[in-house]
Image 1 (cartoon, rainbow, N blue to C red):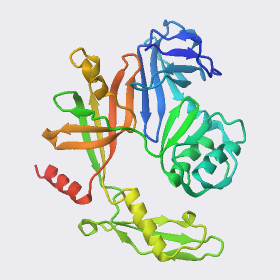
Image 2 (tube, rainbow, N blue to C red):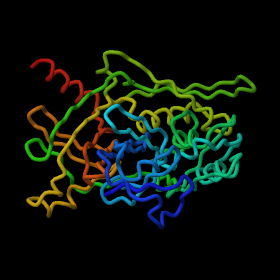
Image 3 (cartoon, rainbow, N blue to C red):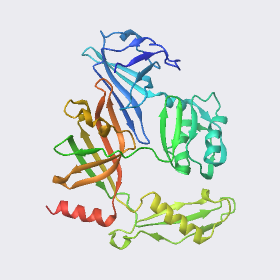
Image 4 (cartoon, rainbow, N blue to C red):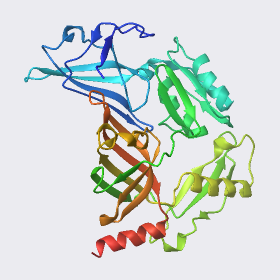
Length: 357
């Protein structure tokens, strides 16, 4: 599609705004799980409507296969000696970066999301909703940007309640889990153009211990170390220390802390090596030969994809953690897969096989 340029205060996109940007040399949207959602474009100085490109104005573009058009706010325009400019824009949900929120506390996800809006010190530019309910104490002790409190820092909404965000214009929706599994395969010798798998043992813990502390009285309660199933195989007995003070309104028992530690160890996959797969593939649904495969090639962030590369021992089902979409060609240029975990024993066995070749 042709990206379309709009004024900075556009909300409805019912017109063509300043018009299209038909001479774009390159235009890609990158969306990363729990990370950036951005647009990068190269445009010639002689291109149509070039003179209208300006900071804070909005570019409307399709971010992924089957997704609704999304607005991206221009943050920088960098000229080059070759007669082009590089345009960098962030999704408009990041307008919430400039919204300070006063300190407050909440006892549920719904109240926490409502509290972020009601305690905003300026007009809140986004709506906040969730498709699930969950109790738990949210405590914000200082003035902070709204977008920062959504995730990425200790005590944020994601940190307390979990979930995965969807950004749709100025609407931010927290899903309990995003993505689908439609049987999409990325296979060597078929549609795969590049593949790399990295197994990271740097943050693997053999167990977890939880504690509770009352800052006013100084009283503390400690649980016992809760070990992973394969703990005896770990060459280094690293134990994760979890502060569960915010999880209880009153003093917990050691048994409660033990249960909390075991759950935290499992929910956060602390005992499992982190396996990241970077895979690029050709979207065959855009070719005449494989046009009937279109539904099988559509993927979005958080979807589950199967990667098959038996020659190097890769056969894995993992979730899409990063999507790069070519706006002009209307196809994916790159996907990155992650959140694929394996037990310590199987990962160690695979590692030994690789280094022994």
